[in-house]
Amino acid sequence: MKITARSLLRGSVAAGLTLGTVLSASPAKAAACLVDFDHRFSLYNLYAQARNTFAIKTAYSASAPLHSVPCADAPDQEAAGNCYYYREPCTGIATGSIYVDDDSGLDHYHLVFSNPGFGEADIQACGFVNPDGVGSGFRKRVNNQCITPTWNEEPRSLMSHLASQWIKVSRVSAAGSLPFKITRINVGGDTPIQLWFRSTGGAWYSWSSLAPGNHNLSMPSAANLVRIRAAEGETGPYEILDFNVEML
Image 1: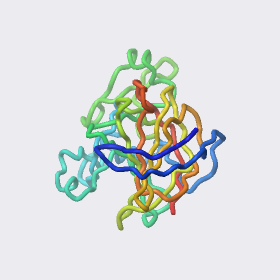
Image 2: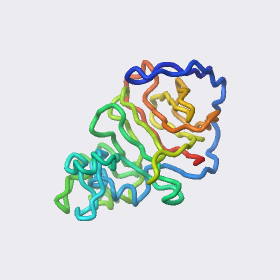
Image 3: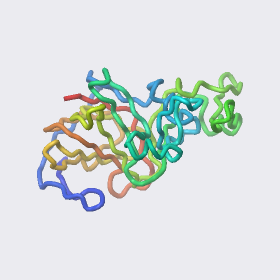
Image 4: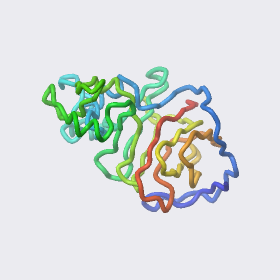
């Protein structure tokens, strides 16, 4: 597979550089940070814990019942750049958190439930529940009984709303943006993705098509931004199960 850089979103100019064949599928390797959308603290601080799978732009609020509010209701936080869709801490405040945000102007993506009990038949049988007035969430079927789950303890994966939706990944600390590499990514579902990264020197590189499965990536330089969407020509949404980040 030949991996080259080209133009990206909204007229961004990509450098004419070539990575070469650097992709292989193999078991996951240890890395500094695993982002798997299962982090309890991260899900708890996402508005309504994405209990209906909708991950919307969120702002932290110590006074809110669930410590978070929709960013649309917190214009001061929006202006300060303190909103997020999903952010997962790594090894400490100084090393920054990994932010996984919509980058297509949509108001959400989906964090779908991975465990049994949330299938289509289960949802039809059990429906929704709103125990705290914050919003309706999926109930879970366990041993043919419908229960209210602890939503932030349920494993998830990221599902795009559309094939054309761009998701961006960045590493952010109190001091600002920090460099990183994605060393491995696990693509779920049946839709291949394309993955772009902007090096700290400003050049864009890409993998044009990563099939569903687990892929080790060899980024030739540190990145300050990664963007992901479905591969060209794909029409269905895509799914990201998890990825590893090396913090530089």
